[in-house]
Image 1: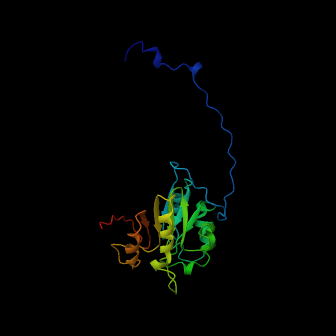
Image 2: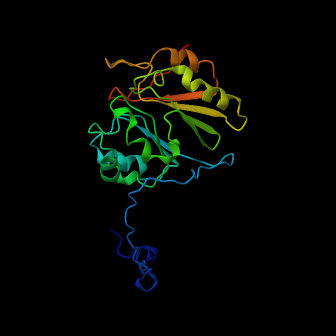
Image 3: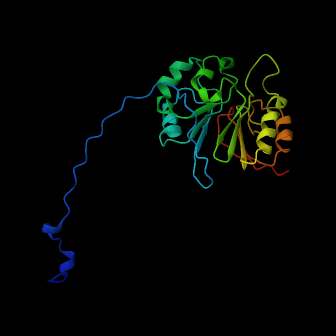
Length: 223
């Protein structure tokens, strides 16, 4: 090493910055109630918004942190929320990271017909098929869950919402979400193929999210 190293490599203690003491942040109590306000999603073109999607959660508290820890504009739950069907226990316990966030859900086949779960997300408007807009994206919930009548797994019940979003000039893209997938490489029964036939009629549809099969996959339909 050189006997006399360059002076600019020797720290000058007099000029060293002293750390600034940060004020102590007061811990806020967790919010254990669902949001009941309108979504604060961006509506200005070019403004960023984020949404997260997950299904078949059950006893996985880390999923709540992954879903809501970064404060997405919207958290979307695609069915089979908690297999014990205790909606309030699931939401205020394991899913507490998502409490008070903008959240919506689509019904799964293990969700006891939605009993209790529909009350967790006021943004659902008491329905399992509805539209929520996130900027210029129309996010449409579709009911492929379990029910005793023709109100689920029936494309005709949601098609009016797709047509409405397609004709809305403020909507550039449509994203659909439902529990049962239309296509799968697994063995679990899917949503009826008629959904695919219907979706092809609406060119604004760019993505469709589903759960049900307990693994991650993505498909690009060739037709």
